[in-house]
Picture 1 (cartoon, rainbow, N blue to C red):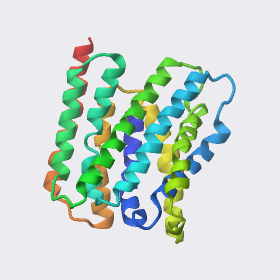
Picture 2 (picture 1 turned 90 degrees about the vertical axis):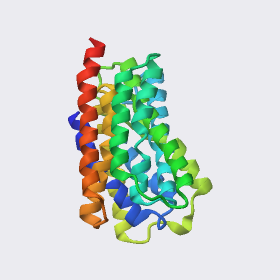
Picture 3 (picture 1 turned 180 degrees about the vertical axis):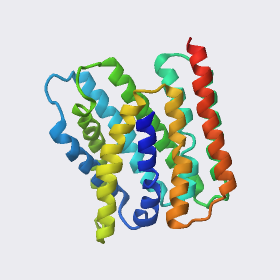
Length: 286
């Protein structure tokens, strides 16, 4: 749980940094590719090549293709159609996907976890529901693909690690996650990338470096490791903690208008969903 909270704080800045400094200015495919390459370079010297089952390598690579490759390509494109608050709004469905996918993997149905995720979704919706732009449908669909693949990557990584319980630190195999993401990001840039929209300022390069090394490299590793330590309901709820955190950053740093009453009410609803999950899911599993 502590790891998920730490990464939530780290990622709270990412939405605003992308929306304020990169979206529409830097080619989205290049932005994603640079993040993948930087994160992969961090883990390359740490990666264990021998003694790791082939199924585990492929499984982690697949989660990287989903959770990073496809997710971030869709996420960056969505900023061409949506504002930062709208992007935050449309990410509120990720908890539902996490819960449903986890249940599907175990061939079960957990009403408590689904209820908690639905309450968290309601809380995030209270925070961020307002007027939508004309391009919201395109942006909405892009983000639903991103939400689904991000959820699938989280659930998939957790199940891969449970299936292959090696006596090996997680960081020794997490490099395969970014190698998988590279399989998606590199061809996408080669086919769809725009060489005329590469970073033009030191600030843009610096933001990409931060997003690649900290938000992607460190953040995704800690998030997935944290996801392995909690149940699906808690993981689903923590996905929506990004909404109030991201809005606070957008409000305090970029001085964007926000309804503080709705922010407080939505935050309380999300906190209540976490209590519901912790209280009743344990009883259901007992």
